[in-house]
Amino acid sequence: MAKGLVRKKLDADKAMVEILARVSDGESLVAICRDAHLPAKGTFYRWLAEAGDGSEMRDNYARAMEHRGQLFGERVTDIAEQVISDPDLCPQRARVAVDALKWAAGRLAPKTYGDRASVELSGDVTATLVPIIPK
Image (cartoon, rainbow, N blue to C red):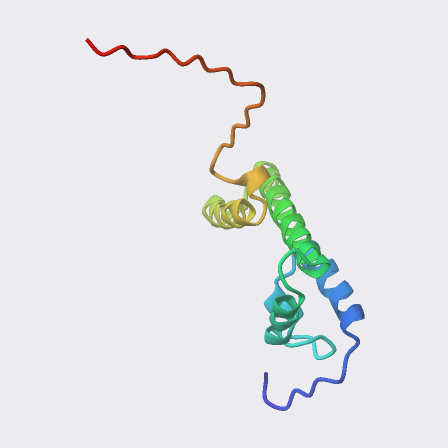
């Protein structure tokens, strides 16, 4: 915690709603938890750990992170359009930003922006066993 920063007792439910909304809007947890009226990052992670796997809190946080990844993916298109429409925009800087956003989007929303392709098959499998007769 920053020197001199005093955090007030907070309402965990209200804090969680604000944190999840801001994460969904693309803000990092580190930046969010710098606000004095919100818990420190360690407190937030402790809440997640105490909630346990499969809890509503963890599910909501995972969904917020996935939304953040979707937002990053959409920002790639915005940057590309800016480069096309503004000839003075430095393409190398745009490339660095796009690469960083693509990487983050691939990690936060892997179903949509991940590097791996997933193939799902469905249907019935029928197998015929043929006995082997020794000679």
